[in-house]
Length: 84
Image (cartoon, rainbow, N blue to C red; front, side, top):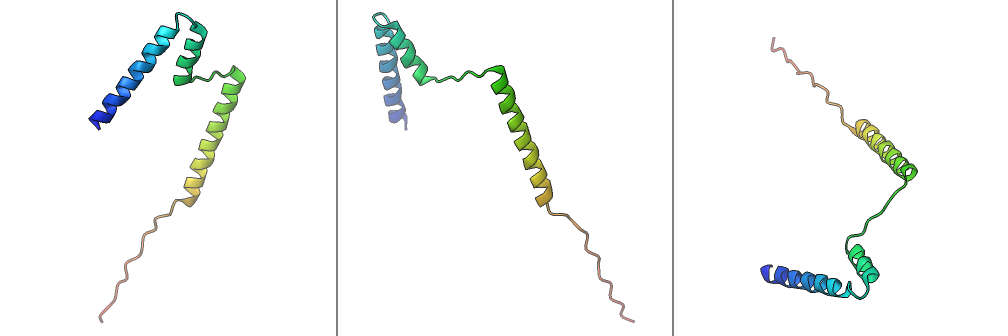
């Protein structure tokens, strides 16, 4: 496992170093390569509100379905047998 992690670290270093070196001649491509490693997504306020509302609605539906499927615990009466 350690040997494999060392290889991965060397590969990451080589990639970072080549992007750094290439950034002097083509900075836009270097930016694209770095952003492809750490992708981000931007939302407008309306999209964010819509996704938040959708998640809250799904959460409420899940809670309701869990309550409906929850078994009810009922006490069993003890049976008393008279030996008279």
